[in-house]
Image 1 (cartoon, helix red, strand yellow):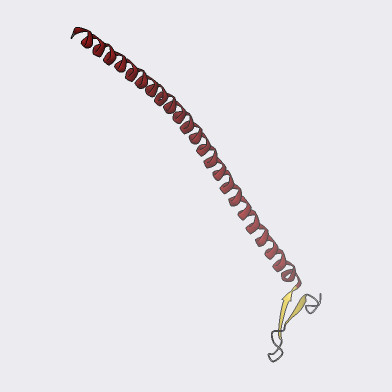
Image 2: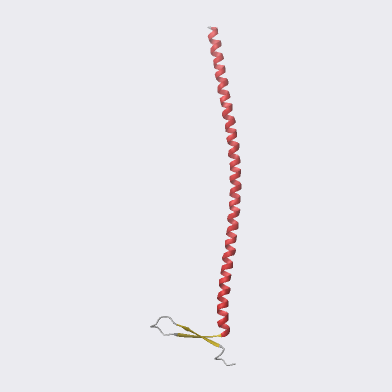
Length: 113
């Protein structure tokens, strides 16, 4: 084979005032470089997708754990509110009983005099 036909010439043109550079590379290299670039980019994209998926899964797990914790805290709050309401009702009953006893004592004391 002719070695001239196995080469590809790339012309690099930067600015109008700068000289043109010639790069000669073999045909297999001309195929391998873009393939390597595509492979690198696809690997990068796949890696980013994998890490993003893992991050999403981790965030979903954390959200589920927070949701469960929130449900538990709401249940605890409801229990405490119920206990507080019962305590308030008992306190009101005790106040009423105390008033009743005071009234009885006052009426007994008034009859005794």
